[in-house]
Image 1 (cartoon, rainbow, N blue to C red):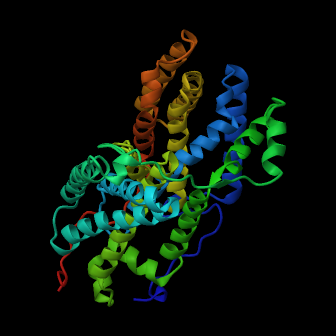
Image 2 (image 1 turned 60 degrees about the vertical axis):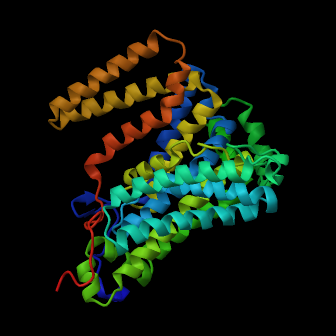
Image 3 (image 1 turned 60 degrees about the horizontal axis):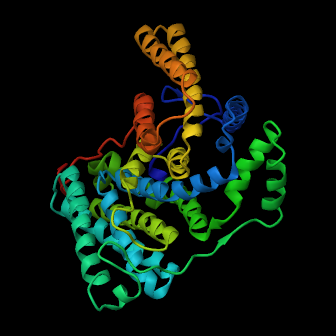
Amino acid sequence: MSATTATTPSRQPGKKQGGRRQITYPVVLLIIAGALIALSALRAVTGAADLTSSGQYSGALAAAVPIGLAGLGGLWAERAGIINIGLEGMMMLGSFGAGWVGWQYGPWWAAVAGIGFGLIGGLIHAVATVTFGVDQIISGVAVNILALGFTQYLAKLWFGAEGSAAAAAGGNDKQSPPMDNLSAFSIPGLSSGLGAIEKHDWFLVSDTAGIVRGLVTDVSWLTLIAVGLFVGTFFVLWRSSFGLRLRSCGESPVAAESLGVNVYTYKYAAVLVSGGLAGLGGAFIAIGTHFYQDGQTGGRGYIGLATMIFGNWRPGGVALGAGLFGFTDSLQLRGGGQTVHALLLLLAVLLLALALWGMRTGRLKQAIGGGAVAVGLFVWYAFTDTVPVEIVDATPYVATLLVLSLSAQRLRPPKAIGKAYRKGQGK
């Protein structure tokens, strides 16, 4: 099967394809400009400086990378028709592998080890689902459970054993010895210039400067690699014959096989890449904190799975979702009670706008429900000055539920996703 065997209807900007209007670049720029204005106005009204501070967005970028890599890994597997619930376990394996190798050989080898250990998790999942036809959900859950037990057992054996070199270097039953720091970079001149503008507190201008400065200051080299992986994924899966064949395995494996595609090979390749990407996400966490620690993935594999669904199985959507969840994760780490309180007002305004739109389009029940929640949020905002720390800690998970519930109507998963495939079944 070659790239020329599939024909794609020509697309014109702003025209509907498959019943949906395509979002053009001018529309994207208008959305970005509107979001900047909304954040600037919200910061000016509420006084929550962290809404547009460089520190918040620097932390958001660092928090978004492991989530995005996990989501990208899920995208590879599910585009080939394999559900990968085991992303969290593969991240655990990557984090452990990075901690084990990193304290001995440095952070770059830690990243390589993270990919390798993630590949092991991907291989287990691929053998179970592709070769033996095990239910993909059950296999993914099993990978998560096995990874948890495997990493905890080996941490005690390798890091906490009395008299071992790791224990002497600072390791224990739940933590590896510390590894060297991975250098970061800032764009010369731009970072300091934007910092000067940010301090002036000018409406929109200083807010934009703060956001951009957070994205160009003290950036990890692994972050650049992650960006490259997103771009590379798009070109490989949507601009190459290999990607066309792989995606055909997730849409109609029987048709793909009839055209000469080795479906098993492509499914194996996709799940292995999925495990490697998730493992790199786990390694990123370990390298950022300078050691492996039990439980440090913190459910990011599951949030990565949510970003993939929110992103409609597309790299750009995954990146957008990872940025959103990275922002909320950064709020949690920075203890942003005032910032979350300010976001209550923004969420109330958005829900009220959706309620008015629902009334206009005849969706009365949705409009009433959204309007009631909006009023409740307005009251909450008006009669409080901050939110409890427990709510701040739960913000990433609440955001996950909200985003998935709001985006559920526009999702289009691969047609053969989750379906067991046996060679020759279409004959």
